[in-house]
Image 1: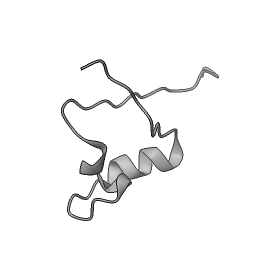
Image 2: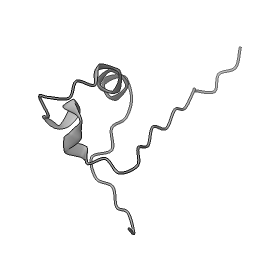
Image 3: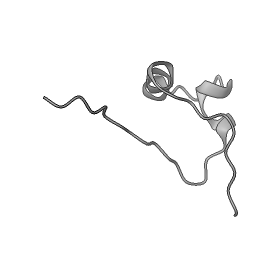
Length: 50
């Protein structure tokens, strides 16, 4: 087995951060995204040219 880490990048199109439970939305439940963020890295600041 290799010692290299597994990397998973999750990106969504046309979704505001406030649309997920990670950022306080109580209507939309996102347990899988919450688990990935808790066990990995969560980028809170991102910039797009569009």
